[in-house]
Structure formats: structure tokens, C-alpha cells
Image (cartoon, rainbow, N blue to C red; front, side, top):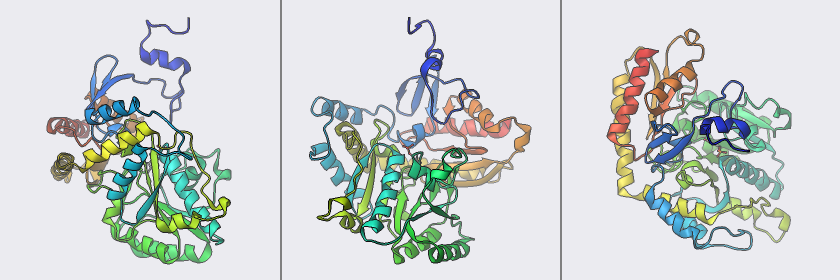
Length: 427
Ligand SMILES: *Cc1c(COP(=O)(O)O)cnc(C)c1O
């Protein structure tokens, strides 16, 4: 007897499943979610939770959105999967046209893969091979301190938040680091950049534009970032914007890069790209990058490919997601949530336990200023508090952040805000 149906899903889970980013000895319990609709998750006991982080920033138009699921269902009976090497198909072509239409104007070509880590891995490979193909001796990548770009080797190498990567560090590619520009330190950051350009042969610079998600929604100064990008362009350092988290409206604009004057050579997209339905990623690039690979020499091509590249179902979900994003209705939702955040911000601004409130678009974050030592594990206690309130938030250390789906109702947003205010009373 392999499965015991008298056990709950959570109990059956323990037998064979190994979860991501989890030390199972310290965190043995997994909550079984059986249904999701709009902004709400339902567990196996029937309890409801507002998905205050859009299931890791993916389901921005709401879970099981019928506009998207009906299109994917129709595609499913037409063409499910086909090799994308030597073949092409309508969903990929239509998605490419829709994406190029909203991406920064210098972006011309799209390369598909399966997740955010592979999107950045490919961005790094494009930057390194660009110089290789042009016979430039440049092999070093540059990245921000505390950046996060994913869990594959190239992506781990450029990630500054590598406390968990100790077992692999000696296999990393060479990376030099820049502090994020905060406004006050812009001069010092630029000085450091000049020194790095002098001392290293830098091939590319990868960065999360304006908001560093995994670094607890750290935000940085657009003018400072623009100055860095300008110096990179002047030095033929290929710029790779990792918009895996920031893409598709979360910052209030379709892409965070739109807040900047200097556009990146390469952009990495995933997470909300497919609206939370299916895993897929895109690495887009300018004509200049593509041209460096375009040759009669086969070895100058980009020999990277995943089996499920440009899966037609995922492309269909992405295309439907972009249509929703472009709609007036969705844009009004984004403005509504921004406004709600601004009001909540005004309310919290002078609270003695609230530090470093930051907000951009629908992203809202602050630090809880309490003595961490008084709580065994403050982060876990906060998480439990929110779950008891029927709100799914995932605090990072003492940072509480909200990144709810655009379609979250006013009433649901109020419930999230109230759970935060209760946390301020309780902790
Ligand atoms: C989540 C994330 C990644 C990694 O994406 P996965 O799909 O989890 O591999 C890379 N970069 C940023 C900025 C992210 O937020």
C-alpha cells in the first residue's frame, strides 16, 4: 500500500517530497493548498488566505483567471508542445510581437527558457559570449552587493546574497561587486565603478533595476543607477536588467527600466510573464547583441536550449497576461493599489516601530523596529501571525512587505493592512 488516504495531504507530503529553500528538520510542516481563485488561497481544511505576495510575484492578474485559463485550454487542444529548434508556432510569434511592443524600444530579439534563473543564466552567457565572439578579452561579471539572480551556477555566482551557496563558491565565475546607489552615496559608487573598470576586464553588469526583491525589497536611486548604466555603455560593458521580479507592472510602469534614461542591452523576464499559470522565461536583447552572434561561423551561435523552450501553452498564457496588463481595467487596479499603499504609508509613517517605509507601484515594504532578541525567531512568529489572520505574507527577517495581485479588492487590501497594524500592536 503506497498511499494512505486517511492521512491529510500535509502528512502524505512528508513521505517523499523535498521542498525548495527548506531545511526539513527545522521546518517539517507544509500547508496543503487545494484551490486558488483571484487573490485567495484555500487550504485543505477550508481556511482562506489572501495571497499578499501573489505566490512569489507571479499571479498578478489573480489566480485561475478565466481570460487566461480559457485561452490556454483552447490552445491545449490545438498544439501542446513542439521542438523550437527548426520549428516555430503562432503562440511564440504573437507573444514576441506583444512583448516587443511593451519592452523598452531598444529590445529586438527574444530567447526563451523556463524560469528566472535560466533567464539570468542566459543573460550572463550572452554578455560573456558577446565579448568572446568579438575577441575581446573580458571575462568578469559585475553585480550589486546583495543582488539576487537565481540558483543555477551563473546566477548563484552573480548573486551577492550567497549565504546558502557555501558548498559551491569555488566553482563560481569571477564577479566584482558594486554597492547599490542610494542617492547619498552616488559619488562613491561611481568612484568604485571607475576603479573596477580600471582594474578588471568587465564583460557585463547584471542588476535588479530599482528594487532588490530577495534583499527584502531594498530600493535604490534611479539617478545613481542611470549614471552607472551610462558609464557601462561608454565602456562596452553589456548591461543585463534582471526584471524577473520587477516586470509586468509591479513598479507602476510595465518595466522598472522605464524609470531610467539608459536602457539595458539585455532584459530577463519570468515570474509574472506567464501570470502564475506555467513556468517560462524570456531573455530579450538589443540588435547589437544579436548581431555579435549572427555569423557564418556556427560556433558564434548561442548554443543554449531547453527541451520545453517556448512551450505553446506557456506562450498562450503570457500573451493573455500581456493583454490583461495592457487593459484600462488592470491599469486602474494598479493605480488603485498604489493609492491605497500611499494612504497606508501616511498612516504608518510616524509609528515608532516602523522604519524605512518604501513603496514603488504596488510594492510596499518596511522594517519592524523591535528588539529582535526578544523573539526566538521573529520572522517565523510574524509569518504565523499573518497566517492566523488569513493573510499570506512572507516577511524577510524583520522586513514586512506586501505585493498582492492587482485584482485584490479594496476590502481584501484593508484586511492585509489591518493584519499589519495588528502585528505592530502585538510585536
Ligand atoms: C525569483 C528571481 C529569480 C529566479 O527566478 P526562478 O524562477 O526562481 O529561478 C531571479 N532574479 C530575480 C530578481 C528574482 O526575483
